[in-house]
Length: 152
Image 1 (spheres, rainbow, N blue to C red):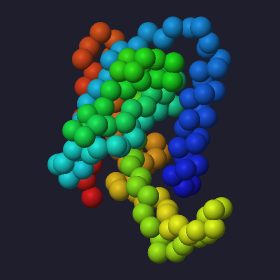
Image 2 (image 1 turned 120 degrees about the horizontal axis):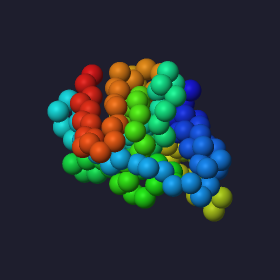
Image 3 (image 1 turned 90 degrees about the vertical axis):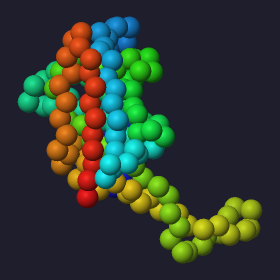
Protein backbone atom coordinates (compact mmCIF):
# COMPACT_ATOMS: atom_id res chain seq x y z
CA UNK A 1 0.00 0.00 0.00
CA UNK A 2 1.46 3.37 -0.93
CA UNK A 3 1.68 6.43 1.36
CA UNK A 4 -1.16 8.32 -0.34
CA UNK A 5 -3.67 5.47 -0.16
CA UNK A 6 -2.67 4.66 3.43
CA UNK A 7 -3.11 8.29 4.52
CA UNK A 8 -6.40 8.59 2.60
CA UNK A 9 -7.64 5.42 4.28
CA UNK A 10 -6.76 6.78 7.73
CA UNK A 11 -8.57 10.04 7.02
CA UNK A 12 -11.61 8.16 5.69
CA UNK A 13 -11.66 5.98 8.82
CA UNK A 14 -11.56 9.05 11.05
CA UNK A 15 -14.41 10.64 9.07
CA UNK A 16 -16.60 7.53 9.22
CA UNK A 17 -16.03 7.15 12.94
CA UNK A 18 -16.89 10.78 13.60
CA UNK A 19 -20.07 10.84 11.48
CA UNK A 20 -21.81 8.25 13.62
CA UNK A 21 -21.25 10.28 16.78
CA UNK A 22 -22.22 13.83 15.86
CA UNK A 23 -23.02 15.89 18.88
CA UNK A 24 -21.34 13.51 21.31
CA UNK A 25 -18.60 14.99 23.42
CA UNK A 26 -15.51 12.86 23.79
CA UNK A 27 -13.93 12.60 27.20
CA UNK A 28 -10.33 13.00 26.14
CA UNK A 29 -7.03 12.89 27.95
CA UNK A 30 -4.14 15.13 26.83
CA UNK A 31 -1.45 13.15 25.01
CA UNK A 32 1.91 14.57 23.96
CA UNK A 33 5.49 13.59 23.41
CA UNK A 34 8.50 13.80 21.15
CA UNK A 35 9.57 11.89 18.05
CA UNK A 36 13.27 11.49 17.31
CA UNK A 37 15.11 9.63 14.57
CA UNK A 38 18.56 8.37 15.50
CA UNK A 39 18.47 10.77 18.45
CA UNK A 40 17.47 13.90 16.49
CA UNK A 41 14.03 15.60 16.58
CA UNK A 42 11.82 14.98 13.53
CA UNK A 43 9.96 17.99 12.14
CA UNK A 44 6.76 17.36 10.16
CA UNK A 45 6.24 13.69 11.05
CA UNK A 46 2.70 12.29 11.11
CA UNK A 47 1.90 10.55 14.40
CA UNK A 48 -1.19 8.33 14.45
CA UNK A 49 -2.70 6.52 17.42
CA UNK A 50 -4.87 3.63 16.20
CA UNK A 51 -7.00 1.74 18.76
CA UNK A 52 -5.64 -1.76 19.36
CA UNK A 53 -8.23 -4.16 17.90
CA UNK A 54 -7.82 -6.68 20.70
CA UNK A 55 -8.95 -4.19 23.38
CA UNK A 56 -11.88 -2.67 21.50
CA UNK A 57 -11.44 0.79 23.03
CA UNK A 58 -10.00 4.15 22.15
CA UNK A 59 -10.54 6.77 19.46
CA UNK A 60 -8.19 7.30 16.50
CA UNK A 61 -6.07 10.43 16.93
CA UNK A 62 -3.40 12.24 14.93
CA UNK A 63 -0.70 14.89 15.27
CA UNK A 64 2.14 16.45 13.31
CA UNK A 65 5.47 17.10 14.99
CA UNK A 66 6.99 20.58 15.22
CA UNK A 67 10.63 21.55 14.65
CA UNK A 68 11.57 20.11 18.07
CA UNK A 69 9.85 16.80 17.30
CA UNK A 70 7.06 17.61 19.77
CA UNK A 71 3.46 16.56 19.10
CA UNK A 72 0.06 17.00 20.79
CA UNK A 73 -2.65 14.56 19.79
CA UNK A 74 -6.17 15.39 18.75
CA UNK A 75 -9.11 13.36 17.51
CA UNK A 76 -11.06 14.46 14.46
CA UNK A 77 -13.78 15.90 16.71
CA UNK A 78 -11.43 17.21 19.38
CA UNK A 79 -9.77 20.54 19.82
CA UNK A 80 -6.10 20.92 18.94
CA UNK A 81 -4.09 19.41 21.77
CA UNK A 82 -7.14 17.79 23.39
CA UNK A 83 -5.61 14.32 23.15
CA UNK A 84 -7.70 11.19 22.79
CA UNK A 85 -9.82 8.81 24.83
CA UNK A 86 -8.27 6.37 27.27
CA UNK A 87 -7.34 2.97 25.87
CA UNK A 88 -4.68 0.87 24.22
CA UNK A 89 -3.14 2.14 20.97
CA UNK A 90 -0.79 1.13 18.21
CA UNK A 91 1.34 4.13 17.27
CA UNK A 92 2.60 4.70 13.74
CA UNK A 93 4.96 7.45 12.63
CA UNK A 94 5.69 8.53 9.06
CA UNK A 95 7.15 11.39 7.08
CA UNK A 96 7.19 11.81 3.32
CA UNK A 97 9.05 14.40 1.26
CA UNK A 98 8.56 15.11 -2.41
CA UNK A 99 11.71 14.57 -4.46
CA UNK A 100 12.41 15.09 -8.18
CA UNK A 101 12.41 12.02 -10.42
CA UNK A 102 14.60 13.57 -13.09
CA UNK A 103 11.68 13.59 -15.54
CA UNK A 104 9.65 16.55 -16.75
CA UNK A 105 6.06 16.97 -17.87
CA UNK A 106 4.16 19.65 -19.78
CA UNK A 107 2.03 22.08 -17.81
CA UNK A 108 -1.43 23.24 -18.95
CA UNK A 109 0.16 26.64 -19.70
CA UNK A 110 2.55 25.07 -22.20
CA UNK A 111 5.66 25.07 -20.01
CA UNK A 112 7.41 22.16 -18.35
CA UNK A 113 7.82 21.17 -14.74
CA UNK A 114 9.76 18.52 -12.91
CA UNK A 115 7.91 15.33 -11.96
CA UNK A 116 8.02 14.72 -8.21
CA UNK A 117 7.33 11.60 -6.16
CA UNK A 118 6.93 10.85 -2.49
CA UNK A 119 9.93 9.50 -0.62
CA UNK A 120 9.75 8.03 2.90
CA UNK A 121 12.15 9.89 5.17
CA UNK A 122 11.70 7.48 8.08
CA UNK A 123 12.04 3.67 8.06
CA UNK A 124 8.90 2.01 6.70
CA UNK A 125 8.57 -0.30 9.72
CA UNK A 126 7.14 2.64 11.71
CA UNK A 127 4.64 3.72 9.04
CA UNK A 128 1.97 1.02 9.25
CA UNK A 129 -0.03 0.11 12.37
CA UNK A 130 0.41 -3.52 11.30
CA UNK A 131 4.22 -3.28 11.48
CA UNK A 132 4.97 -0.55 14.02
CA UNK A 133 6.53 -1.77 17.25
CA UNK A 134 5.16 1.21 19.18
CA UNK A 135 2.29 0.86 21.68
CA UNK A 136 0.79 3.35 24.12
CA UNK A 137 -1.75 3.09 26.93
CA UNK A 138 -3.64 6.35 27.42
CA UNK A 139 -4.93 6.58 31.01
CA UNK A 140 -7.57 8.79 32.58
CA UNK A 141 -6.32 11.61 34.78
CA UNK A 142 -2.64 10.91 34.21
CA UNK A 143 0.16 12.63 32.35
CA UNK A 144 0.12 10.82 29.03
CA UNK A 145 3.55 11.50 27.58
CA UNK A 146 4.85 9.09 24.96
CA UNK A 147 8.25 9.61 23.35
CA UNK A 148 9.27 7.59 20.31
CA UNK A 149 12.88 7.15 19.19
CA UNK A 150 13.04 5.74 15.69
CA UNK A 151 16.22 4.02 14.54
CA UNK A 152 17.45 2.40 11.34
